[in-house]
Amino acid sequence: MKKNFLIPFISILLTGLLLLGLSAGLNGIAAKNAREEHLSIMETLLHGSETFVVEEYTGDDENIVSVHKAENGYVIETTTPGYAKDITMLVAVTNEGKVVGLVVREMHETPSLGLNALNDADFLSQFLNTSGEAEVGTNVDAITSATVTSKAIARCINSAVAYVTGADIDSGATSWGG
Image: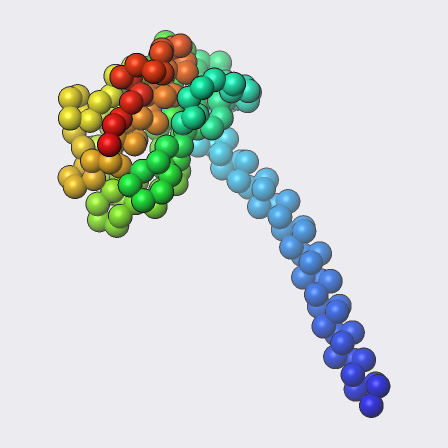
């Protein structure tokens, strides 16, 4: 009777240990792939840059998550509340303060409305070559029926530019209102 119990128990234990070992090994690969993908996106956004140095951000703008300095500018990771949840973006800004690239990395907005910001090239291209003055309703057209999402994206971009240029984040440059 004891042998019948021991064999399945040992099999389950060995299978669990094998899965644990595989999981630990794959976590390292997944983390490496995520870092390589992040670097590839930054190189694409800030064309001509290959080396990025993470700079510690100690400012007051809660939208800024991380700062990556390159030879010809910065890639700033920003997060700000959208309509449903936070919107995370990478924004490339030249040393002169011009937005030259941007990508929405994560959002969970309403399908067929705010979620359109993920791939609406006409909407996103409005922010290229701006210098932190993006304001929905003034010089940026909102996505139809997604004003809060549109303003959140503008806020991310304005925060990134404000970091590079040293603009006052308490000004209207980064305030999106409700």
